[in-house]
Length: 128
Image: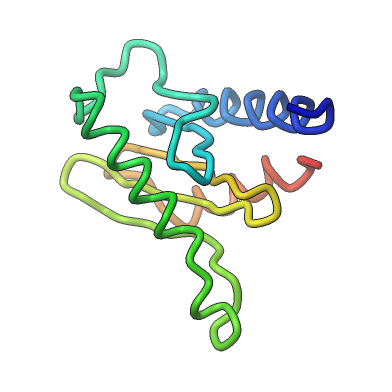
């Protein structure tokens, strides 16, 4: 890994830790283009709903592929985020197309997705 990538990943890790301080956020992690978790993770004391590692990895892979797709970029503009509200959790992914990674967040269902999105953009805007 280049020194620049290592520096960027360290910044991403710090930003994930900032997000994990939010009371409603359960998980904040960076997923690479292969769908692997490269940094971040669950808040201390949180037990994943998907406790099977294989299922969790399959989910990361699915989110990665869905977030990187570009077929509507020309007509609708680039993807800002994908959000899914489920009974037990809200899942939001934010693609970073240049570095081909994405931020995945899992939060309590009570969270306001638009407020979360604005907070994430504010926190990650200064990552270089």
